[in-house]
Length: 281
Image (cartoon, rainbow, N blue to C red; front, side):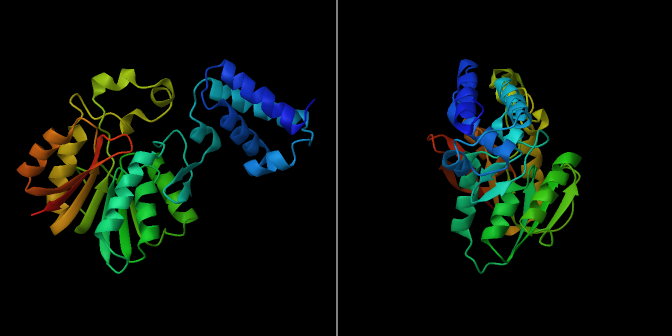
């Protein structure tokens, strides 16, 4: 039988047999994509028959998921903060832990503050877009070394009707000299190159390595960001960084060397150090 319920059962069983832990919800999401309907539709119309063409499309997506391709890339979609973002293999998939960064910025600046914000290594644009949607008087600039990432971030800004409030530049942090900022945010690559091989297959096999690799010590990009931020930030401006769970003490040394004061360290949902808030003295 090719009705929705039978096809869902087949899909989740297939994923389960191939060691996909989230087999049930993944099957539902993939079938929703094929039908171009919300998940609720599946439950309300579970007796509806599917054509062989739709069934073949569903099986093709199941096979991609079987290979451990992240569900966000198959769906070209990821929820972050309060919004939905287009993603593909050219950008890192937004993580719930990064939402902490948005939360903290909201606490620092009220709705009436007029600010210039720089997002270094913007990827999908999820950080800068989320901030500007929350704060109508913020203006953003976002940079990334990947041309494809910038294209995706611009696309997301357009979807969220923010393309007139964010300027995008394809640039490394070293070569960026435009403007003075009240706030710099960044979730840079911070994984030690030697530890990359221990990442799960769905990360290592699919996500862009240059968005993960932080050099031999994991601090390669941080050196550059802190150095450049000391020049681009206005006096009293804030630098908000996502870091690896074991990087805080080395980061404090780097920040102190460049005349930054650490305001606070925020822990992620599993209790690990994840976000630093600093002020340029």
